[in-house]
Length: 212
Image 1 (cartoon, rainbow, N blue to C red):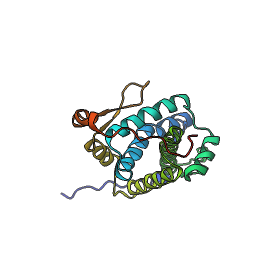
Image 2 (cartoon, rainbow, N blue to C red; image 1 turned 135 degrees about the horizontal axis):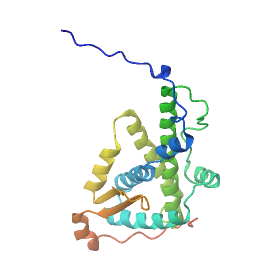
Image 3 (cartoon, rainbow, N blue to C red; image 1 turned 180 degrees about the vertical axis):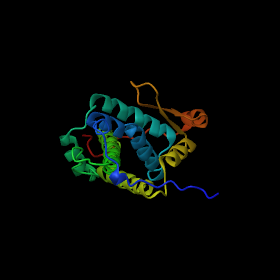
Image 4 (cartoon, rainbow, N blue to C red; image 1 turned 90 degrees about the horizontal axis):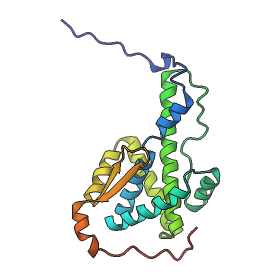
């Protein structure tokens, strides 16, 4: 007996309920793990392009974490400053939730909001790095460009966040998504890096360009 084929329903013909269009819930879901993904993007490129070792990355993480604890919200003034500093831009502008009519449009909005959430998280990290004064404006622009290239690889399927996580861990940093809502992520050096951290080069001095 031949196998029955289930007819695929066009998502544009699937209506969405008021509950599915809950703006607050959609925004919360879009922002889940955005800081984790942003750190994977930044760490992997610092290790790959800037040739930074795990102990240096760990110190940088502590510095940026302290900065972000006092700058919890990214404002439009921060976005404009990031545009000038390293060419940051919001990937998906004018995302409108009130015009959602079907499941396809709902998923499109969710996807665009997720892209924006990760982008803003990257922006926050780079502003924190700039505040520490450890990288010049040129270095930050290069770092941001490389992050964008990695995002493009993830978009076209040639790379994944899972691959980035494995590569970062292979180089000595384990980035951990915490189940504790008070602390979104933590990091730790792998056992090998803990054994050699005392013999690595010290954290570089701040760039000659003034910290902002």
